[in-house]
Amino acid sequence: MVIVLAAIIIGGVAGLLSWADDGSIPHAILTAGGGFAGSTALLLGIAHYARTP
Image (cartoon, rainbow, N blue to C red):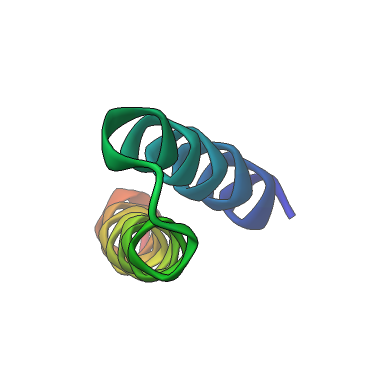
């Protein structure tokens, strides 16, 4: 749950920054999606390797 919340925040901030930069909504949506997907993958990888066996 924490991973999804952090990924939503990261994706949202990335989208807002992209929209503030050039004002294109489709570009901001794609940037937010990329930020969400990338941070989700990274955080899931960290959670996987941080577990104790």
